[in-house]
Length: 70
Image (tube, rainbow, N blue to C red; front, side, top):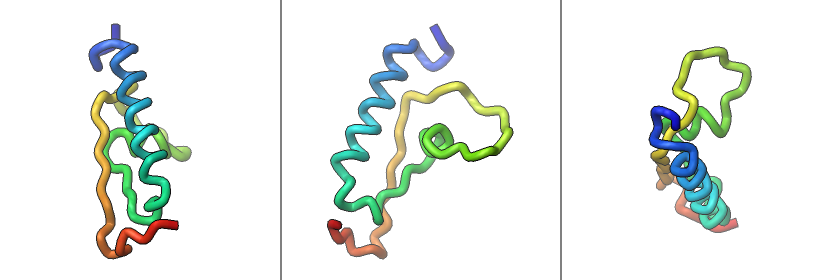
């Protein structure tokens, strides 16, 4: 078991985030993934010490886009 509460919970949390992102795909220009999940989804080549996983997901919507579906 990891310090984040167990592998099954982490998998469920990541699945929920991916499902939300899929549902919001028409508005992808306005969706911003923030917090730790952003670090895990788009790490690039950065070499920093971070926790292995997180259970929470943080999304923001950029209201300047007008939420126009594509």
